[in-house]
Length: 495
Ligand code: ADP
Ligand code: MG
Image 1 (tube, protein in one colour):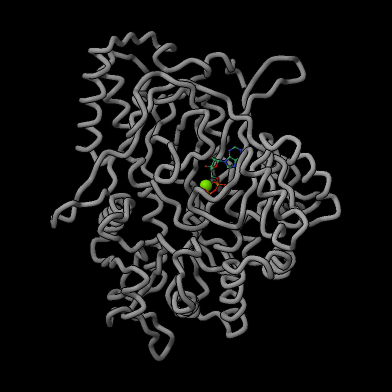
Image 2 (tube, rainbow, N blue to C red):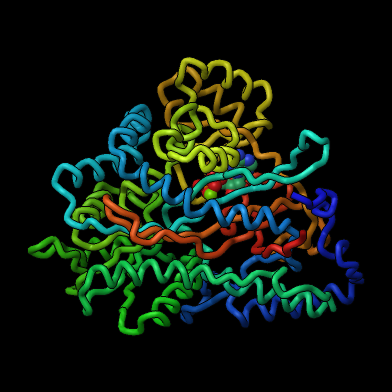
């Protein structure tokens, strides 16, 4: 690692000597925002009239953020081994049962998922093939090496196994940044803004699954959120990018979109457990929805999930992969000796483990100590439930108050504590509603996309396929694009 951290603490503007007065900045923001819309860096917003397709630009950074090339390479290289790890976890019934047993009595949602998993396992699985489209999220921490020089290391936030989004829109973000750099007159090597087409890879995973299903007339089902007049599904453009890449790779695959309420009315199983929607046979059921308890307002939605799980359709992902993405599993994997069960090679184990920060259960014999630590210094930790989608974690004073409330109850088993990643700050301009475009201190989160197509006996395909960089004000706790204050960004690779 040759990069000196001080370089990272400057903005790209400082690094490249870009000078922007107010007039130039206004013009740039205006032109880059227009370009963002034109090339598809957009999300859906509510429509005040009948015309359904209202969009606005996704939040983005005006410039890419400097990132050491070796950090970028290392994050990408870990994707395959991380996916192999999750593959083994999801197929290790004993391990999953042990790891999750304490949270099932106190976490209704995880319990419902577990019941679906057990039911189908006991009935006998009729579809051996499954697909996972994952995204492994990291933040960068500063370290001081033994020789007192400073460098960066990556630390894992979480590995998403369900509804890993933003891959479509990311394909356009490096082009957007090429545009802003050209407006600013910046010279750079082409390789410093690396190619990024996540949905090409993600689509290849779904197309592969469709081919393995081996029925020309069968469709790929996108299970999506239910739009409301006041709140459309903002992810729609992102999903369309994926659909477009499926179409480019195999134009005779038909993609259908359905919400849970539509599926409740239209879905049934055929004689040989074919998944039928409106009379169409489903080859691949791809979930962009269904990761939150609020998506299952009644028992009927869980029954729907069970029907899909027990069907012949290939699931993306199966309930087993969904459960393997739980924060609880992430925490158990950091315990002494656990990685040894899944990763034979010492060096690889060390590489994976080096990305872990401390994760702690609240119900083990040593928990009292860590709970006390968190009560004394809440800013050193984040408290997480078994949830996805952003906005569920507790930080600072909220963490402290909540921890006080649950520390002597059974409910604490449903939560885990995680060390705060001491993310290194950079500087950039964030172009998003209600945030001014002035240069500010920011934290970036790098996500790596990957595809795993497998049966219980073998990994058929396992590959990495691109990245997401999200950047948020350093004072914001969460870096969600929709739920938090993050902006789409791209890495500007430096040595
Ligand atoms: P979710 O499943 O809701 O996305 P995450 O575990 O990814 O939950 O956390 C949401 C966000 O909170 C992350 O994107 C990151 O910005 C922030 N965050 C999570 N864990 C940490 C941590 N250990 N240190 C610093 N920030 C964190
Ligand atoms: Mg996350």
